[in-house]
Length: 367
Image (cartoon, rainbow, N blue to C red; front, side, top):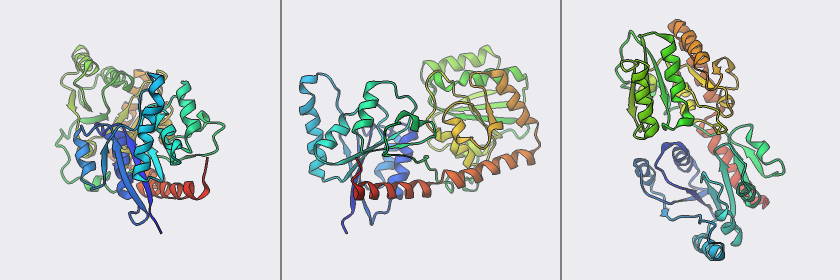
């Protein structure tokens, strides 16, 4: 029986986020049933080397094209179609973040099944509507997203998966050395305003507790990062807050922490499914998250760990509640979170769901 040939498309592997999910998915698919290739617009980024180490064919090829100028759009789309046809793909699975629909049209021109994973919230432009219409199937990653496509029968909720053996406290032999007398809080995020780092810093300032330490992991070499460093000095937190930059392996830092916080602001841009939060849960430490779409999906059975988005006073109370617990109570929260990840967000379930989807998509000829 011929293998199903699938092309995964993604803009780049500069950030771990979606790139790590694609990496885990293509690595886990049954190689006796699926023939996998990857196309991305750039080979930049340290994580690209990890992807390349899988030994799969990788095409540095842009599989989408700008809409304008419109008079030359079809020839440019046809160039993508010819690439799909020449490689004889059965399915193209897009992990592009944008509302671009040229990829989908290129696949339609040559009879290739095309689906995409909706990674982020927002469905306001006409281009998202065109993209969803052209897609043979849509994968959503939280329970609110289905409402974006009320007339689309060919869609399914497949939460992102995580390797719970890799993201396990037992897998980290050398955690980061910390002051055992301090209460350590950690957050992991690309430092952009919507992530709400200022809310977390203001919450710690309100507590006026010098034993609290905050570690911020993520690229801080930008205007927002520098603003947050300046804010730390303004709030008198320079001895409590450290900016550690981007780290390829966050596990040693998470294992050394007492609490993980994701303080994303709700400014019209909601979370899809924040994997940094799931990673912390899988590492078995207590977490707190702002009560917005995506975060409250991941923490749907742990509503007491949610706080009002953008409210440092509410967050400070939650942090203090966790801090005042004894070590056994905090350990119990962390274990409950890890068990939940093992039941709902495993990589095995994620891969199995995709394998079944790919086979069904070709067998049923879904449109």
